[in-house]
Length: 121
Image (tube, rainbow, N blue to C red; front, side, top):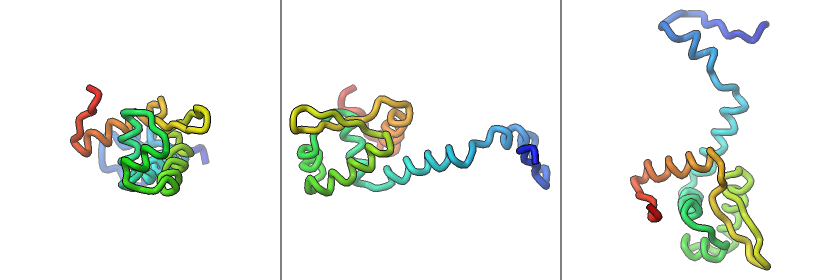
């Protein structure tokens, strides 16, 4: 097999172009994982907060009205995904949105879907 997909039926004009540009399964799985992470309301709120300021676990926990341990769990998942990054300053660890295209797009989607205006604009 040469890797070219051949459709058994022709229903439109652009099928070959679309099929030729179809993203690979691995890339789609990576994007799906990012969407899974932000499909949780708490993580969505955490990401939105960290889009606009750098915060420590204690402040994120207070803003979410959750325990530090519960917030740490969410932060770990978001960091592993690459949506947020951290830095250490003494004993404190600070989190913020990663400076990546993916993170910027997630920020945009959150604000558009929630119809929330960035407080820093």
